[in-house]
Image 1 (cartoon, rainbow, N blue to C red):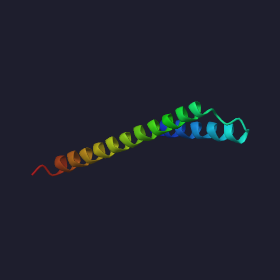
Image 2: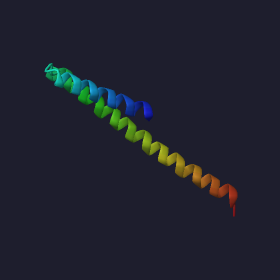
Image 3: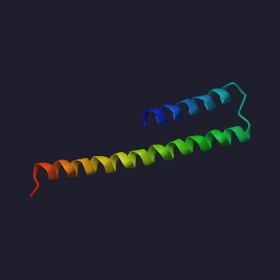
Length: 69
């Protein structure tokens, strides 16, 4: 998750730098970057959901193990 967050920040920074220099990325390149950002955010959300499910499962297993009745 940390890697994905870092990739999103790097891509955002690249877009900001290109725009601030007056070298605005072409529409196609900008669209590609935005799509990549959206994909990374979606992947991060899926990973967060999977992590939450694993935490819940782990909590249930610990509870069952400590109180099997």
